[in-house]
Image 1 (tube, rainbow, N blue to C red):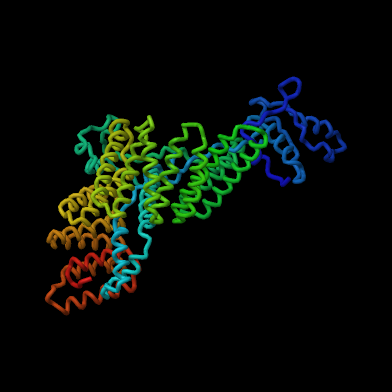
Image 2 (tube, one colour):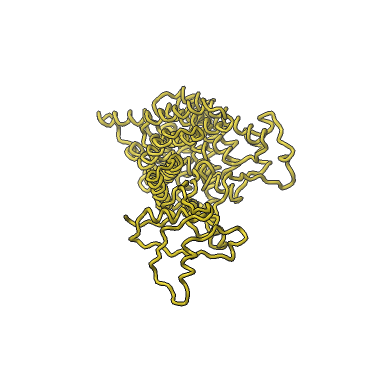
Length: 570
């Protein structure tokens, strides 16, 4: 048989064979044919063959030197030797792999359940894309200044998933590390402030001078260096590898993280094989495999490999469904939710809705509903995105509003009822859903409702984001369109001026792409329709910008602005 290190072959509950005194485990598998020193090492070999169980007080004085097995030894002999060495006997003993942690359960590397709230900003919707495609087929589209091919062929859903998940993940990581925390004074200006909710914070949360609240992740940090700094600290191989995975994810090294997770998967696959051969219970092994597959799928989502992610989630789902232990219901719901996310990212909206509806039904049947409020809010928002994509905008708004209600309940429960510190990711998710409400109302020409929702969105994101952040700029771009539809050009110009100021400060000057695109938009608003020279100059700048910039988001925004400004008919 092919040789594998013994710690990869140790089942979690292997029956041990004991000697007649029932205290000393037998070690039948030690190679007694090795060369011994002529100066009496035969006695030492006999001691090694049947070592007594060392007490805690004797660990530092007794060393059990077991010769390593050769590659030609039978695999079952290796298993016997591994199972006989207890982790409590020697820190270098062969131990069973520990149970893995789900990345999105413990908040490892900024990933948390309930955080995958999708933003619709810039997304034209599948209905609009189909109209353009049909218009192109019949040759009815006139030549225009915007590259519709770039806009139509772009994977908007995949972009929305990566952008939204990455944005909230980055914010959670910054807060958990203490780099960027939410001040109490800022929280009191948000849409879920004590005044807005009608509640008061607990005594422990009352404001003090220069007091800052930071979000503390529920995950216990994995110290991958402790085994080197402290030789008595024992970590299983899977634990060490998971610590490396988290380190790679913190550096956005997704390929390296995937490679480490695949090694963990091989550890648990060997564990399952061993348990099956020895007739042991395999539920724990299958659980370990399912959680590791789930983790691999999450990394694929972050890396934009949505089909690969779906394949891993499918395997994890099949395993979790076969586990009889109901304590894994939330794990199954999490995998199902992420499966829906991977299908949404490739515009398979029918499959995505099927998975999210299934997850929603399971959450409603769970008894511990208080722990799943954020989960429900995420699903409601994302199902609303599907309704928008499939052309049911009114129903989409209803789901977004339900999501906002659930998010406020989550904040009330965490902050006001249980005294948890308010965090930036709470406000970010609220801002994303408010922006979705505003964006869909804008598409429906419900201008007053759109402006009101954008103002609520702005109230939250201004407390946690700089004005030059991509989400803030996108929100302001669409607020401009809402003001133009409301014949309020003054407010639109003020917003563009605010954007330009922020971009100049962020880039230490105005000689950059971001400032150029905002200046072009300002010129379009200030150009007089009767001044043909001004219009030509403006259009020339737009054409130059579009040739040099292939960002489909900016192309989509310019298209809408050109329509509303009346400079050119598309």
